[in-house]
Amino acid sequence: MLIPIEGVLSRDEVAQFRARLDAAQWQDGAATAGALAVLVKRNQQLDDASETAIALGHHILRKLGANPLFVSAALPRRIHPPKFNRYADGGTYGAHVDGAVMNLPDGSTLRTDLSATLFLCDADEYDGGELEIETVYGVQSVKLDAGDLILYPSTSLHRVTPVTRGARVCSFFWIESLVRDEGERGLLFDLDRAIQGLTPVVGRDNDQLLGLTGVYHNLLRRWAVT
Image 1 (tube, one colour):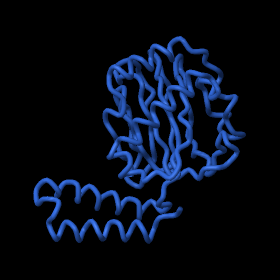
Image 2 (image 1 turned 45 degrees about the horizontal axis):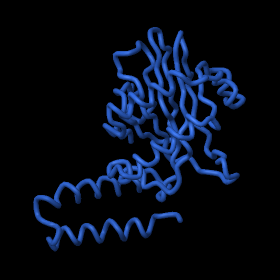
Image 3 (image 1 turned 180 degrees about the horizontal axis):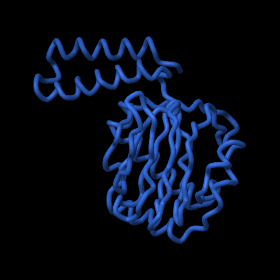
Image 4 (image 1 turned 30 degrees about the vertical axis):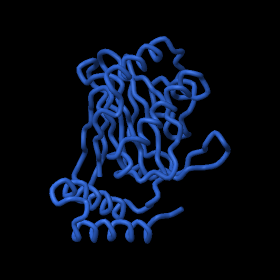
């Protein structure tokens, strides 16, 4: 399931991010690519240890923690520190699947259940640069405006098409979910959205709504991996 989340960052926040990123020192993205990915990866990345990457990454994590749609969809257990990349002058990333396990700065590892791309440029600022994700319904092309995020299964084969005008700047990261199974996580998401939609209609003390809420938490209790 592909889930777009609008307005993770405000326009003012995006402008502040862009000012810092435009002044940053970018590195060849191939330096962080795996043995297969290095053959298809042509982009730039920010040094993960730089003050800019750390500060902006922390800001993103704070915003995500307060975003109900993100929390409902991802049920995050742990989130990899956000990274930043830039595509320009034909930059592209060929078809690949994200690694199943990522190393964290503290030496522990994270299972990648979900991948996320947070766009930091508006769609009309560059040509190309679509994130193409292969799903059971065919290839889905994603190109969102600045501040918006797309959440998708890390098991998906995906690519970034060549950027032929301007520059595409994004943050990207991975989430280990409390609910490992994609199907179970999707059912919980649908149930939670239904509960949230019904609450203002029937009231929080409605018996049927309370029953649905109990079903949600009992399913989460059954499926959660802690």
